[in-house]
Image (cartoon, rainbow, N blue to C red; front, top):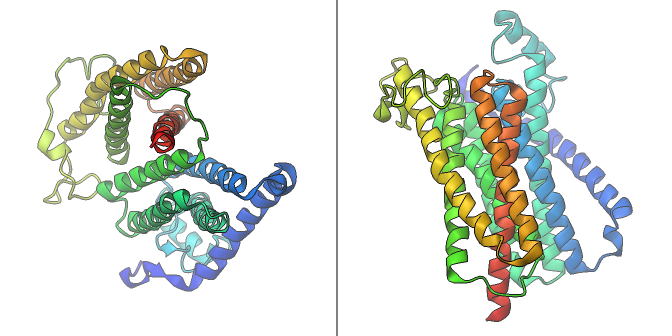
Length: 367
């Protein structure tokens, strides 16, 4: 495709209409079936934040499916598909590309997967803008700054989404796009949770929460780097890697960020030892991640029945992450396990976001 055609804005109107249709259906269901019309203005802001968080979670998981099904380049331009708003209108271009490479990046199925991802991404942006408007109408001053930051973050995320396509799945860009989605989840989860604890957490519990949040972020970043470099199967077997406790690894090559997919910085094919280094680092840090999460679960367990329920949820999600991560290795990276691994990480982000929100809210109320 001509590089000059990588960005074509003529499809933007059609994309916006599809996104508006999705938002309209969601809001009508929430208005009539979800009781949104009977809520006060502040309650509507919280309800809208919940809807937006739900859509963002779905979008993160579907984004993983887009990547895992090799559909990221199903439409090789942005924001539309061959300068149109749907694969139907681009059918001739898709058929030509598919005829040249039947198993290539552009097929009818992959184009639909990519465009559905873009439709729901557009719907998410509209919901965030409506959330900001609702906060202004409700005069929720404390929420305005956070929602404004969320909208700005979304715009940056859209920018990374465009680069993901036009830079041909450049690993650093794809990983940044993944982390951007996780950041959106975190920002929205902080806005949703209405819980206020009766007692203020002691300093060591806040340290446990902060350490767990940091470990989760780093482990997600490492997992994203594994996925975007297709290094999941670089280590076979468990707990050893390729029959060794310390396999041969090329750290500098594996963690060189300024390079194309499957290539070194000089353009040569990346060595298997580099992929092993990426995978093994993710495995090693999983130990620190589990320890940090375990400390948080133990601290929550000391704060009564409600906190214990949250501790059980977080602990269960950590166990699921370990199980799905192991399944990816021993079962040859099945799609269902890979999607569950992403969904588990996203759910952990929401849970940690809820805990952070409660701490921040308690500080505001006690000040």
